[in-house]
Length: 136
Image (cartoon, rainbow, N blue to C red; front, side, top):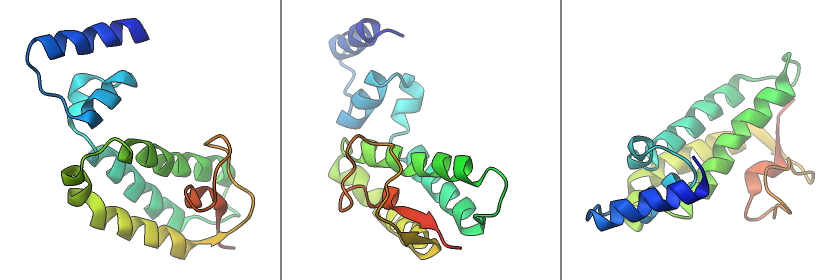
């Protein structure tokens, strides 16, 4: 769906009295369906938790390691993006799960000074997960 059509869809929802959260509006504007957008943070948190499980079991010697690891980091990058649009109530519901998954990820990886380029000009303090590699 084009950006114009998405804008029109959001406008019609507003006119019909649909009360959309900032996160739901953001997800719809990014091309997610209304049904998917209504799920909010949950799918992004789950994707990150599942990715951390794979990372914990991964080895740098695994075939396709780099591609798999890159894919797993996209889960955290997407979570980062949606967290910027989540309300305090939405954040509170998932903060423990996110913190636990982040800590497990940190335990399974080592810090490096070379970032994986999911974000233009990543900052080590803000985009910390992009500066980590699976332990050998």
